Image 1 (cartoon, rainbow, N blue to C red):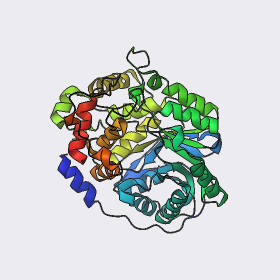
Image 2: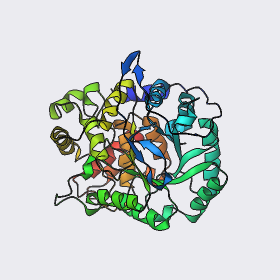
Image 3: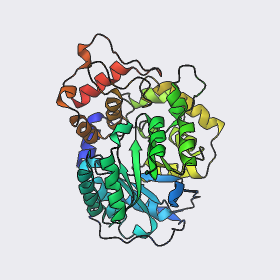
Length: 408
């Protein structure tokens, strides 16, 4: 899939039907058998309880960020997937409308979450009202303060907005999502004691805890999740596929490398499934939201709930890890995060994965344009060397240069 094709496909994706008002759930849903294009399929569902919320969720949840086919979302709900995750910022604000349309009439059997990146409580509450309208519901099960990477970003003003929304019955549970400095953020949120659910980056790139060059923060993510869960916080994992890569057999573009080149390096299929199983084997993790764009991906990912993590899975992920190590940012914070010129390296590399891993050029471009003007004008090509050194071996200068080529 060429880059320009990815852009066209995304921009041409039609808006889904608007959703109607939906009622609060009265009972837990039952697993359902469903069919893909008429073919019956038996699915083994596994369930976990989302911290102290008491919400019962399937261990695999549906991340809707890259979704464009409502029929896949609808079928996932019919099969028995419970939790569906959207955000105001996805697909330039159109994702919630599509998700609401796909789940129209199914509100009693699903758990809906959405997010706001607003910096003030007033703006966040206004976004919440928009989210409810777009999703076609009068409440969210989980509402996240989105993309908070430092304790200072979780302000008293935003926390008060969540308390206000709870009191008004617009949300059931308050959440925070974090892409960066995840272990520190989990510890801080536990200390604050207001956050019911945390959505955190967690994937197999954090598995080699015995490596000498592995930063302590990365190595401690499993322990950080376990500690937060022990304190009663619900734990939802995102980015379990480490940047949306791995769909090699379906011809996805992997970090700008042609499919044939990737196939020579990773010759076996099954890495996406292995990556999900790796995350789910942490029993302190309540569920993983995984983006699924078609029925084939849904069918493959459902197997993660029924199949054990095996030696073959370990081998596949070791191959993947060796291949992506120079390219994939772990968002661990060990590098300091910002170069001497002011470029936010983890953010830039995250935007790059939106383009190259997910084919979401519009989202990446939108996020890039949210950076301060002086930051957007910086060019790594003007520097002879990079002040940011990644202990995991990520080629920071090359990757940020790539992001600037695509987005600036």
